[in-house]
Length: 321
Image (cartoon, rainbow, N blue to C red; front, side, top):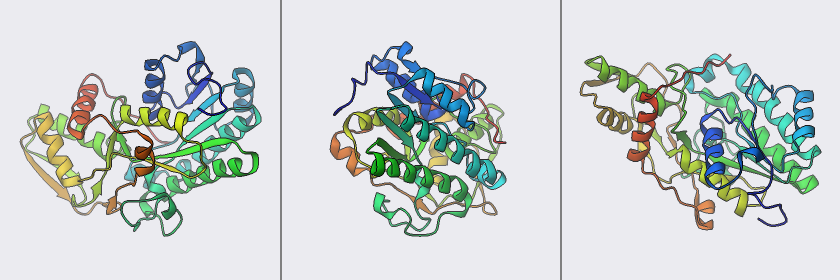
């Protein structure tokens, strides 16, 4: 890591450590030998990242060397449609405050988590960084996408004006340990795990899934994403966004069938075509990161089994309000 303090000895702030991505990054830091005493974490109750003064006070006291900005208001299609204000306003406030404080209080490197939804709805496939802002966004998640695009541009602005090493990674659809399984505001894969698990447990004859099953999606296990983030912090120092994906895709129809088989549901899958599909295809070009030497370790089947085991041991629901 050029011109930076040793990443295993520096102080870290993982914003959003209770979430899917942030929790995986925290575990990865500990696995790689970063002492827990060097990792700053705060729950939403302990530090409201929407409050600028509180964020500045926290940075002034903690003085982190590295920041991972994984805190965000997140959710699936229904949550985005139902709560556009927090998906736009709260995310803008969170990222503006943390990025500004990172600049003011001397953070050596910041990693900002974006999303594949930043790319146009009809984006050429696979999606490459240069396709950003070349077309209209997917309406079902435009509020979240606009906030994330603003965060990317803010990091690039600090990179350009102040030479700050604030980098942005765009994860594909993440799933894994400590996921959100709320049927109304979770993402598709954890929602399907819960649906099929409960249907199998109750011997239901059918499960209703949204849309027609044709959209193609790429998925990445949370622990693979965390390793990619630490790899990027060590090996990537450019303002251009960095895609992080598995480079493989599956239809929602086939994903539902796969999850049903893994959890032991033998009934019928019914598709509710009155519900929206979302973007028709979302495959990311992750060649920049992979050419640097990172590769995912977990197959989709392995990841789903681990996520299902995690769910069966005690799932959680998160509200968006």
